[in-house]
Image 1: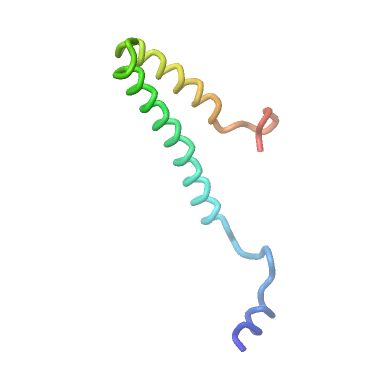
Image 2: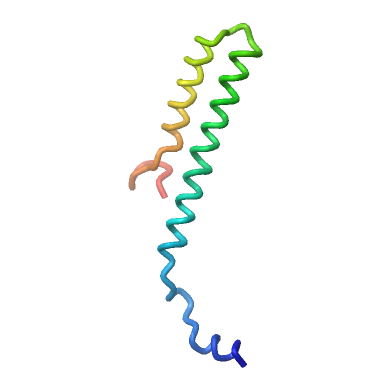
Length: 84
């Protein structure tokens, strides 16, 4: 009986989803930037300790990769290629 009453009063698309959208955007941001941070850390540690490049070159390459990653992952403005 309860399901019948709920079905009669439910209107698809009427619920306020701002809170869910905010949580989703926050989680996706953490995932996106966290992945970049982990990739940069793995790159730095690999170059610093597993190759003859040394710590200095590892830092330079890691900073370049971080800058490129931040540019690719940035929030795009309307009208830009790849903007939602």
